[in-house]
Image (cartoon, rainbow, N blue to C red):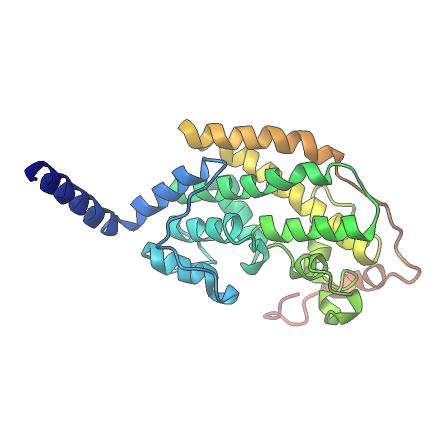
Length: 275
């Protein structure tokens, strides 16, 4: 009986210690879990019932406020959950913030984010490593980019969900969306005036995908141990699959809106007004 009572006391102490684990301790646990291909999530993390506040709610549960302007380790870990558990990368804003975290930040939260994004990308890359020349294939790719990449354009999410282009607000359509245009302007994109319609969006999404892959490679140099090994294994799969993702080429329509208005679009309206 004493032995049983002793074991129960030890279990109780361990349970209480887990409850009091520091925010950074929780982030380290998440990083270590994400180094596995079968992630076991902490049941104490809140479910993503309200997508608009999901990352914020997760960060609060970890033990710190969410910051999507200058993200700390907890904020990066919260986004890792949104990506790898909830598959809603596009729910967080500004891809450049998270690209910087993935490529340049050091720490367990940044490692968790790298592992989460690489896990999601590598788990779907193989099914897209072929010619993408049907609307069905295009929408499937857009859906997976929106799920896996933090800050991905909402246009990709909407089209990936099957929404008709005509149902989107004008500035969310592939031909008019500023974030699609920005992705097309990335290093591996075909340029901001490229194409039209659904496959214009696919070209932008692929350019973002390649930028994410480059950031993951850059960030891997900041890691060590088992998390680094797990990331490198996922990068091997991504490096093999990504060059085989080949979207159908489409031409811009006559009177391409972006081509005609690019100068005006890039000119500030006033000293304090953005583009």
